Length: 512
Image 1 (cartoon, rainbow, N blue to C red):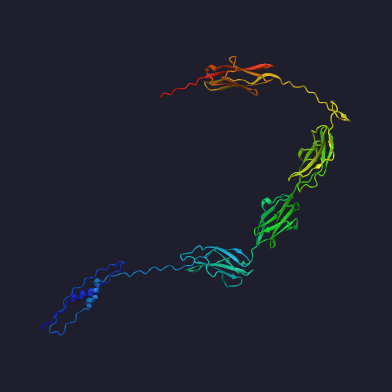
Image 2: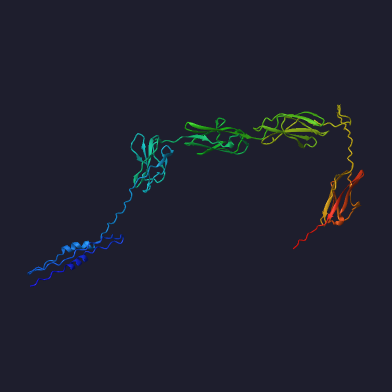
């Protein structure tokens, strides 16, 4: 029997190629181009065996399957792994760590942020301290603090402690910032100092009954102890009040009296340091009257007085005296001298036949004394008994007045300011002016071209304190000429003249 034909191998290749189709590339990364596959060698048909074959031969499927991927498979690059984040790095050390304040049980610190913080940021700071002689560092803040200021509390007074500050972030702890020297836990002593205002550095002068309120600032740490004294003795708290705060001290007197005058001293003390300031307060009042006033002498129309300073000057210097006189007939007092500085004076211009008493007041910067000291004696001004020359006479004073020749003030008229030539415009009022003197008062006459003007209404004539004026109302060309002013009285006459020219206004027409 003829042998069965062998199966076609070509179909097997196609099936193998169809089964091993490469997967589609991912959308994110385009597939790399595969190099062209080499052409497969031509397949030759297997020879048909001779003789009978009981079973068909198995198709050779191994060889074509192995060669199929070489023809159609695409080569793809593996995906790149993501870039790992940079490792967390701690910051640099905090800067400028300093002590801001120290008390008996706490230390206040401040510092600046690190210079290099990095990408990991800054979570906060840890404050640690260690007692002198110990190696154990104690964390002062249970939680990280974001502020650049921290107060370590509940410390033992007198301890010496070392302090450091560490910045913390995801990278860990930074290098610590240390204080250069250990800190003693005790109050820092600030030397006391009184800041006395400029206005209080000079003497304070107040009137009796006025209110005194003086504020004096000071500094010092811890809180200073303030003490006040007056003339080296403690203050009388019943009359003088002192109020003290952390920054100033106030001296208060509700109603000042003269006994409150003196030197007040304020002392500010901290431990063994102290500062002092002195205030001079002077309470002044009106002075008393002069101790005595004496009438030394009186002659003619004059009286000489002397007095002594007052016993009470009002706690300030005497600036002057006021002297008054009174006629015994009327009893009214009149001031003859005021703000007089000497202790003696002569009162003049007294009236003959009258008797006068005198009194003197004292003056200081507050004012005049409320009362005055009056002379015991009275000055009698004698009347004259004859008109003879002044001589000594037992019965009084004789006076003969001198005879004077009366001066004759009469004079003839005389012009002190002459008329001046003038030019006037038609229709515009003009004036002619001159000045004359003479006793008795001269009579004034105005003339035009040697003709008396008289009461012509076109003209107005004035004479005020010797100044003579002639007003010409709206003059025309006819009013031009020579004008004369004549002054005459019983002793003579005088004249003065001028020329008046009246012009016409010429208006030029503009050519169009």
